Image 1 (cartoon, rainbow, N blue to C red):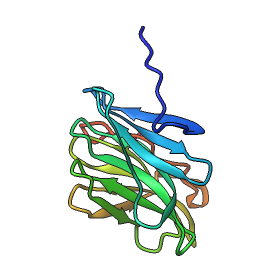
Image 2: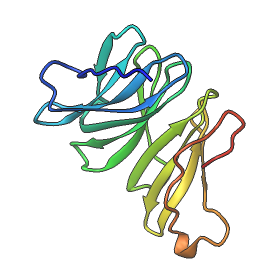
Image 3: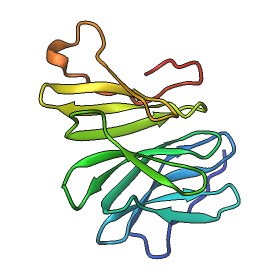
Length: 161
């Protein structure tokens, strides 16, 4: 087994890779001593850093084989966590299920479907966001008081963990 050690940027206080796709592209976050930022590291070692507009804490959690990234960020303007999807060209789209006060976007499959969890006035719920942006909220059967703990991954068949 081989290991590759890297910092997202020179002088990063903490570099935390969180996901890798089948082509060896890695995403994750790093802290510069002030805030946390996202990065994507190509298989050749090239690193690009990114943040959604207004983010002071960017946390990429998933990447599919095309290089599309899902994640969560804390927005400085409204002091809430939002989900985001970062396209291969670098365009970032922020999203929240209706009524959400906190959104955590975790996994993404090769179809671009994102899974995660959000919180609203009634508790925590799972969600699916398809590649077109439509969001479906759900809770597993018999979830006590709608306190879903999280949906962290989705495979290419649409099975959610």
